Length: 501
Image (cartoon, rainbow, N blue to C red; front, side, top):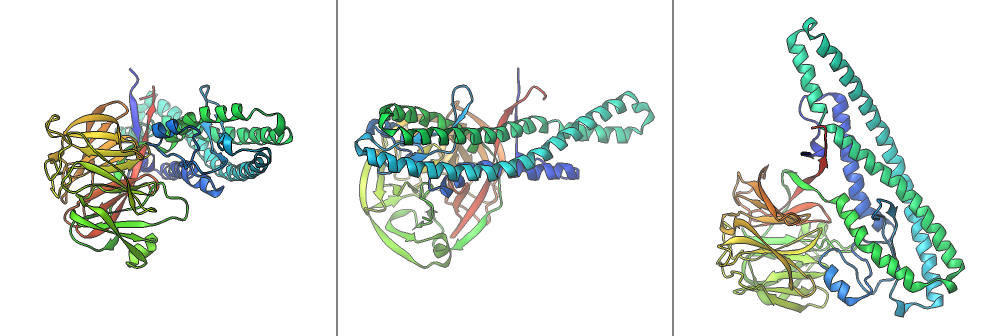
């Protein structure tokens, strides 16, 4: 049976490790930042956004909109990369709807697309230079490890001539290095993708130039079909790069001290570049006033905000903002409301069948926290409980447009025993308390419908928390900590299959 080795690449160097090991930790951390940059920053540099992929049919939009999905009024788009069934990396071109296309419009859009591809190519070149530099260092580390392995074998043959203590220390160093072997292999595989990206971009540029020369004879419908076919594979590929399992949380960073003991604050993970608005909702019971700050800087200073008055009061602190909509639990009900932040109106509302409300199944701290809405890389979620499930946390995937339930999972963890909870990459994480000294204690994986108990320290600086939510764009946890608005950085690791362990 092949074991799975969970490696935290940002914490690869333990106390007392050698200098090469410390440098290796820096390189691997750099790779983590590079992959994060590829998935988030790179599209923004060329005016793109992975969350905005055109879908030609409205039915497909309803099905796919639970994840990072597009706005239908946009034109041509380019995704950075994807993998086909054979593992080949490709670039995806998304054309506008056919009804909006004419011969002149096609020509203009193709020119714009060519410019964007050129911009991506230049960015990939810079990324390739940095990655190749790090890869050279990785290879030197591999050579050192192989030399150490050879030396270790020699020592093992003549260990009688050495002091036993020194022999044991050398053996321990070798054991510390062995788990890094699969990480190095994964790193080399990731860097090879960048080379493939460059080649695919060159191929795409040539194809687009040919289309531009022969636009009158090109089958637009075939292009559109191929683009839509690539969309799902692209999304899967990018999710693999940016997602992982939670391994640690940083100490909290206090952003501001404001409000009462209980409340919620958040930003929009699908906001376009330059939109840094912050929403602030003080209290947990029967309130309607929301503050919308123009930016994080304005929020920190407590200036430059507008007051929104919701049509209905909210209950609890489980509110989230997602794709320019505010989602909240309507007071004294099991109804989830979607409120348009541009239109200032209710767009849709829907009851979660059998969900407890009005402090029937709150978190450990109470506060009418029966329904906790969450967002991660996969879309919109709701955590609640029902009498039929015996008070266990029920996790529901919601369609963010209609609020209809797509799927549900029974986590088998009592909601009243949970301090707080949040979602990352399709996994539910639950703390065992809301007070100082708590830890992330339980996780449920919706991909495998399985759970496990874990032990991740969670430092609560100001006595107790009443809200904890993950933002996939910022890659941080937002928390309301007894009248303090704080952030936690998260560390995610990938599962590496290895025959060497």
